[in-house]
Length: 380
Ligand SMILES: *Cc1c(COP(=O)(O)O)cnc(C)c1O
Image (cartoon, rainbow, N blue to C red; front, side):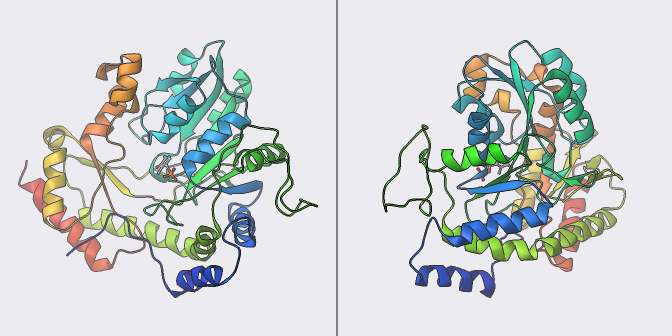
């Protein structure tokens, strides 16, 4: 067996769509990006959108668009992809780390109050492995404190809280189409917001700060520049793939959910592990991956287990391999120690993640569960 942690499902539709773009004349600034943005809005059920070169670019431009700058503070999760926090550093603001809760891996809302200062301008949250954070509480908190809310939705395409898709609850949401995410465009991202002026600003910021788009130029080649913009656009090839992927997304999510149910059934009540599978009436999980927390006798065996899984041809990963504040860059800059983020520390060091994607066959899930059970049994 050779089971990939994440495997993009690219078939004839994507290939034909890419070839069609390549046969035309428009590789950027074209209609495919616009179509992808429209379809995306249709999928999430409202708001405004603009495509980007990555989710990280989206988080970065979100902070600029909201006016976050030097001497501002932004509350960030200790347990996330480093991009959630790097984006705060890009604009020169100070990330203020908040530990996660063990039940979901999401930022611990009970810790927010004590971290807030007169300089706090925004809260950036991640929906950890597709588990939507309690957005009712988060939005209430941000409103009360008059701070912005940024949702890092890189692992949460398809997740909802209440009836509303994640990314539309706060001021801005950023999504990723990196190969192992719910859908892919190779590299790519999308930001959404219910506020048109935020997306309009990001449209300018992602294209050098030009004051008009190609279509808006009466005289070809003529424009002015009002902003220090970047080059963070998506191209037409990526958008063409994205459109085809988006058509398959509902099916993908259904399969992810089904795979999770099947995997859990096969694992039965294996001792010393806890599978993160949080959902309830309000929180609709889009199931990014299987994450297990190793407990008791197994809590210090994570890396050994990962190596054994690798030997058996099972792709795995860690979400994420460090509380962000303990990565060298942040540790050196702010001098944190591991006792400051106890729950993130546990997830970083005692959890492992397994594939859940639509590429999995039933017999692969069976193999994954039985192999894992054998490995664990040999260790306790
Ligand atoms: C993957 C990921 C990112 C980065 O996405 P890119 O599109 O590669 O920039 C950001 N945040 C989270 C939570 C992620 O998992």
